Length: 217
Figure 1 (cartoon, rainbow, N blue to C red):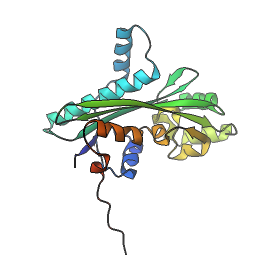
Figure 2 (tube, rainbow, N blue to C red):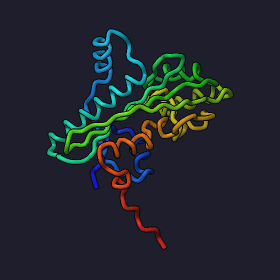
Figure 3 (cartoon, rainbow, N blue to C red):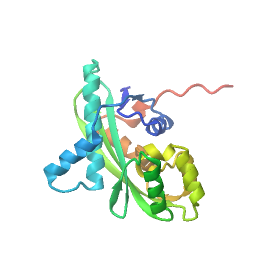
């Protein structure tokens, strides 16, 4: 059974994997995301599309994670890197970081529909083979969300460190009317997409499952 390394400290991604039967070894790779995007845009001579942005950063995180693990003497296992952005009116939104920015975004997206893009990159440490993909799901926000609810949600701190300033697996779920597409994509990692990447690298998804604990009598 290959070890699954998650090159991310996102609690949501780790929990999503755990719910899917995978107990991932999580750690944080050292990636300057802004610098990576700026460099790629200079080289391309144009802004990156959302799909290109999340694919670039997912690869960068997986590559950095694999390099770090090799420095530590690891020679086998699968390394996953992922990234997400939210797009509304053609504008890419990552993490808001500040309450003022989070509030501005919620006032903009309330009652509307945008698209959450998640990039995935998986590397086999033993062979250095890699596979990648991008998934997208549309998210529709409640039109009747009040200013007071927006302020309370921002005060919780949850939206400050997530792409698009919202979650569907925690407090933000009450303010989302519907998701069109794979819901796990919106959490930050498409489980169906990851299953296909695992197979592309020559493994079976069920090989990654941890043995569930015996049920108490």
